[in-house]
Image (cartoon, rainbow, N blue to C red; front, top):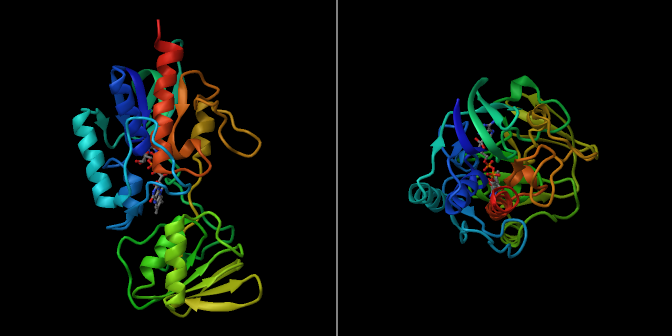
Length: 320
Ligand SMILES: Cc1cc2nc3c(=O)[nH]c(=O)nc-3n(C[C@H](O)[C@H](O)[C@H](O)COP(=O)(O)OP(=O)(O)OC[C@H]3O[C@@H](n4cnc5c(N)ncnc54)[C@H](O)[C@@H]3O)c2cc1C
């Protein structure tokens, strides 16, 4: 088994920022284990080409406190920035390395990649995000609809379709706005008002609605969906029905709870992993950073959590 000081699980913004902060503090060796074929696989997979990557995604003015920071830019610019950082800091990132288990030994943690023990690490930083498992609605999705109903934003934009987007967050807003240029788009949200989306997305939605490019179906809840000829028949809880060619659910992701519980991480009664103010779990020297540590994550929050964790490791465990 390879011995490392810190094993970072996941090479998204949080994992990469953690590796950079560690390097900057001369903590070595650090290895970043990424299950995908690329770094930042959430961004590569879920962001459409040219997407605006907002620096203030959910809240206004989150100030960067560590080394990693960015201004609002496109997906491609952001990914280039990450690539440049990886080269500049000479990060050791191992792709195609899905971590399946972490076990405590006397002094260290054994890290299992694809069920084989491969690394022994003193510290473990878990940065696996929440998008491995997109949230799905409570009603079942009939098998026949699998080519018409999606749980990820489209990377290629369909044309001339009647489309229902479901959700009330930034992703739903962005998906609806980009689809509505060449499609007939409806956005269904359970609440009477948006409250989770940022100013730019709210403005865009309102403009598109004014221009008649999309229809907002506020305070609507779906009861069930069924196949109907070549369409999706949607039954709303208020008794209304409509037919769509495609549905995109944008409902966020779920904490990979079973993975964390298997390792031995405790959860509170609301189902959130228990961490202290420095993101340390009940297992000493195992930390959570990025989306997995927040209710409502963002890239800047991921960067900042990485800074706090490395500072904590240094001050609590490595200062002599
Ligand atoms: C469509 C969309 C639009 C968004 N737009 C913005 C925006 O404009 N601005 C903004 O700030 N935020 C935005 N976000 C949110 C932002 O993408 C996340 O907050 C950010 O990616 C969180 O970073 P992370 O490193 O915690 O997790 P992720 O980016 O999800 O990275 C986790 C990484 O861990 C890897 N991984 C998972 N499990 C394992 C495992 N067992 N072993 C090894 N590796 C593993 C994954 O493959 C992935 O590469 C958006 C999200 C979506 C879905």
